[in-house]
Structure formats: C-alpha cells, structure tokens
Length: 86
Image (cartoon, rainbow, N blue to C red; front, side, top):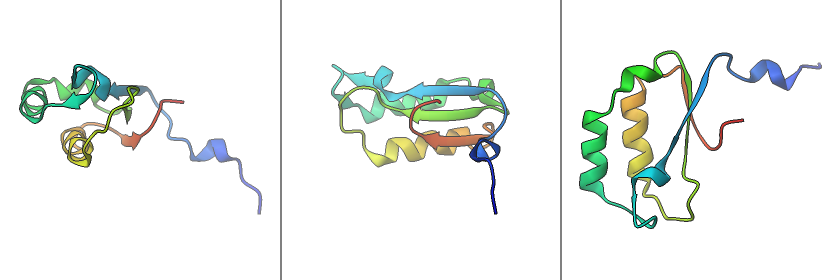
C-alpha cells in the first residue's frame, strides 16, 4: 500500500505562538503574567486555523504552559501541535 505523506498534513491556514514572547528576561515563564495573557488574549483569531506552539528560546518551559494554551485554543483552532510551523 502506497500513500503520500502530504495527504496527512492538515489543510488550511497555519499560525504560530512562540512562548519566547512571554519569557521574563528570556529565561523564565512567570505564571501570573502568563495567566493574565490567557485571560485577555483574543482567541477568536485562531478560529479554523492550524496552530503550532513553540519556544524558540533555549528555556525550560513548564508543561502546564502548553496545557493551558491548548485549553484556550481548543474551541477555536482546527489543530494544535507542538513544534515549528512547516
């Protein structure tokens, strides 16, 4: 059986969220500031889009940050992946 791997790629517009933008001194993710962003951000802009969540800075990002982002994106995004947009 042969198949084309490009058939498995979700169709549609791709957007990315880089957690680097939320790091304090490009090293630490402050929970209070991050949770405030989650409350005030316009999540509707991700409606029907494929969203990639990544961190381009060499920092340790707690797994709860990815889970909270996914929770907020769930009702809007078509798909949510962790990694770079390709």
